[in-house]
Length: 502
Image 1 (cartoon, rainbow, N blue to C red):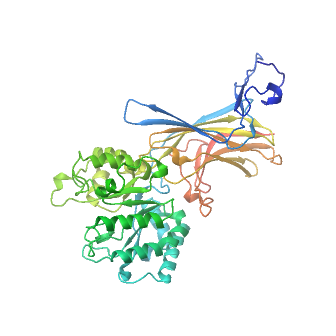
Image 2: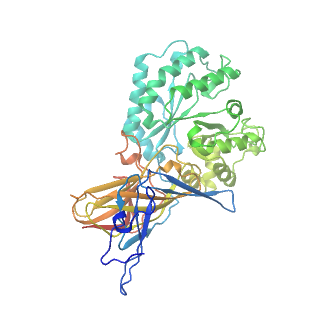
Image 3: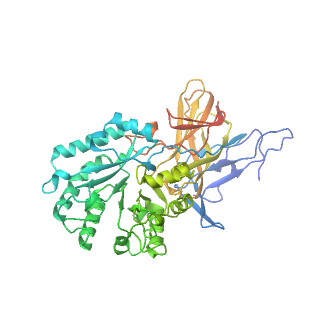
């Protein structure tokens, strides 16, 4: 222990180096009788970035995970001096957010920016299912003009601020034909550059190609009846889609054949589950053997890292078998990590949930829902220094975020609007039901203007094509309260805390 007057930097020169190469922490205590300074820490980081995860079992089936992210630089982070903090109010509103929630299905002629923007306003969603129409190519290769048109369609989505689940189909009825395996594989290879060019707006792909509606039944070429054909198409889809795109398959019986052990880590998992008859009856119209089918547990594990999407299906012949209640929908949505669901089908389920008062709740909980809990940081910083802004948040949604995304802190000058930013972490690591503590280092340039800065928090898209577009930023599950408010024009949440730069 050493005593100093008027403060001191935490460094090896002042305190020695008892553990070379390791992270050191200096604890300070102000002894002046009338001081209002909060005891804080100053951390000097000399190690490479690491993430420490501590998992604490709870008394329920939910696991709470706390993640602390070490700053990624070797700068001395100055935290000595008074600190400020704020807590935030949660909201139950169903905010439209990227890559999750209710989806709608425009037809090919509606894939223009103005129409898609209108659907965003009408439906309150930023997720669409686009069916790539292959009806005219059941016996021929895809012409370049068709591929060029697809690029135009996705460019329209980007301009409208939306993302897509894509599904290629040779027919969209119960009687149309599909294509032979050799041509399917050729078409998948031809689509590869289109999918790569538009990976920023295609987070998910529904397997498609086989049979009626592209739903892997009723194939006129016997593709649905052949294990080898289904596996070949699966392999081709995974090989020709970007690593960032998760491919959802409709036949749960295939999963155990392809992967005897359910993929349980995000790094190894790219196969998700699309249920085309969700909640129709105990078997989900033969997706499972029943409610006790071991495959249900398999899918619950798999979807932790790849998600579950689909649509309900009206059991007209046996309506009493529908698992249609709000309680059933909410329970299974959480269990299967439901990420997205068709907003237009089946209407009997949607009407039931609306009348039962849970439709909005289902919409708000699908996929991730990142909720800010608190923030703290020093109140004053000198130019040329780096401060840490500590953010506490939770994922109260049913699934993790499946695309990588940083947490960004922006200092906005109250007088000029000039901004200074720092980022840290990967929000996709925060699983459903988990909490995270993320320290974001913000370096203040020596030429920054002195004055007061608002502290703002955001989660922008990671792609260079969409990172600066606020429509692709994640809106946190928090309500506006006083000066704490979401800014739709910037995609940032103002915390109502202030930093004075001197």
